[in-house]
Image (cartoon, rainbow, N blue to C red; front, side, top):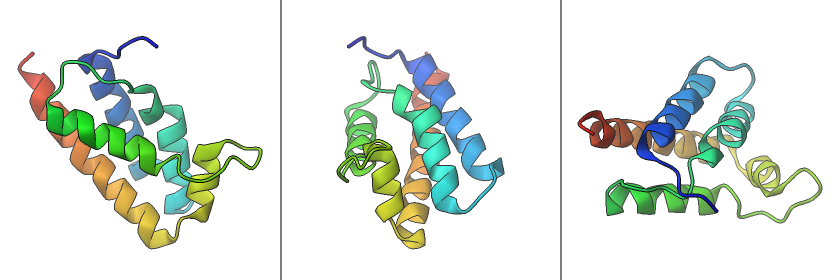
Length: 107
């Protein structure tokens, strides 16, 4: 698997954040769209801090915990989340987006 560069990671997280903020549907639907179409592509990370890399890895683990029931493990995971859980994951994406921005702005 190819290592993903910081600029690409930043782009994917910002795109995902846009989907979370402006997409249609409930938080779980927007989270699924944002993660599946954008944020999941920002892995494995390269040239970010250990903190950012670990948080991206934890997010990836969190978004793929459920067993694939035919639509993929990401879809199954989001379907099993409560609205509160989906909102917490979305908050982590917001936080990670700004952390990645700070780390890559000077590179």
